[in-house]
Length: 469
Image (cartoon, rainbow, N blue to C red; front, side):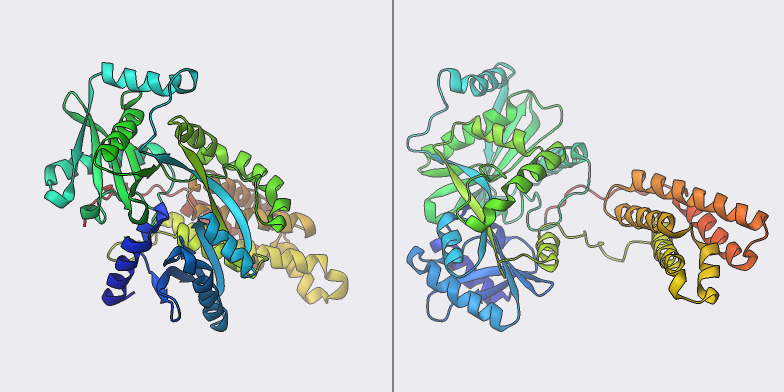
């Protein structure tokens, strides 16, 4: 996206941006933009694997959504692109349905009509009320920082420290896409609220504008692990009260993934609801979708707004799914020079190569009735026999892949155990005098892989957890 295109997009965003997530197109990412020719408007997308991954609703007048999107779809299909749109509102989802897309409800957002909303009273609001009272009694105080009025580097350094401690407490790999936690990106457009106790910053909340709805999206809510109970609730409520007092009419806390996924507007998506429930149950232990939904419901929203994904062709392919994942959760790019090839990284690559070799050798053994002994006899000496060899190769491949995706400790242990088994099997064959030449190659590769995987490199200094541009 050129600077001129960006300025044009920002103008459309301020006029037509009704989706709370639309602000994210202002963040750094490899955005492309398509502008309508017959209707004023634009769609922002990221190209990946011949797929246009569109984020949020079209930036256009509400009455032009369907026509503009039909024009965009025709342009993308003429260029040979698949299309995937994410986190859109129901009018856009129905427009996509009319254009032949498959549509899937992916969650709901809590919406607050600030003119009428008040924290719930009585029994429905007792949990929230307890949190607010506890934070007040503990001495938590709320202040506001508006970067548009001048940057305070000392306060931003405090924010960076809080964010660093919060991210360290989460564990796992952080998101590096435009969905990342970036409270100071595009800071001049934001309002930031902070919670202090005894003068110490315990939490902060960065809010971004929802231009076309005269509202705010409470986007990044970050706290230190030992923050006083009720601090985040007190911070969110106080922020909405102050935004309302300044004339805002709308607020949202962002999507609760998979909430309400039983209710689908596309009949073709209803068969996938059981799979979504299973995915919800399996992923909840890591991502805490259920607790996130309960947390947002605690504030007593005025209503819940559905959010959808849509894709064309209507039967999603592996490439389309891979494209969406690569856009939303890409591998982090190394800063400056490429990351060094650590012994563990080299070992994981060696394990992957071994998996391919042993799988091929095992398949040759299984196909020995159709092949000459010149191929199958050496193969039988290299790999475990037949089906067992395929299973070992599959486990090695699984371990090699997982070592590059964040679950390194378990995957290295699995690979070391498998490699150890192969070493013992090869030593036994060598002891019996079978296949000395090829057996030495197998023994050497397995031994080197184990040594690399068990290598203890010196710890390197960690980069700063956050740096404002």
